[in-house]
Image: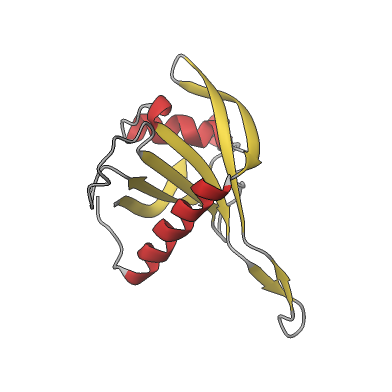
Length: 147
């Protein structure tokens, strides 16, 4: 199912200044691989991006730029994917007594000449959230996938 799990670096639009360039964790799942579900999936690619501690830019601030690069670099048809921003739970406080809960958001883009524009964030629906949680939990049980 997982076909990629690594740090993805994207170029911004600032030339030598590298404005809006950065990195994120990129996981790509292909629902057509693995166990045969017995039915055809219209959007077999689930793309999950997460911020990295060393990232200069957030995935939210550069969503269209990242999506454009990922679909081009991995030859993914945008009409056949679901794009998810994943924010793991974070603990904070002197004794890590406070928690910011895990959050997942689905992003829909308009595509124009191969570029993702006009991102729209919305909550992940319960059925998709169940699939996402299953994929992410399977990932924890298996070694890192190679390209």
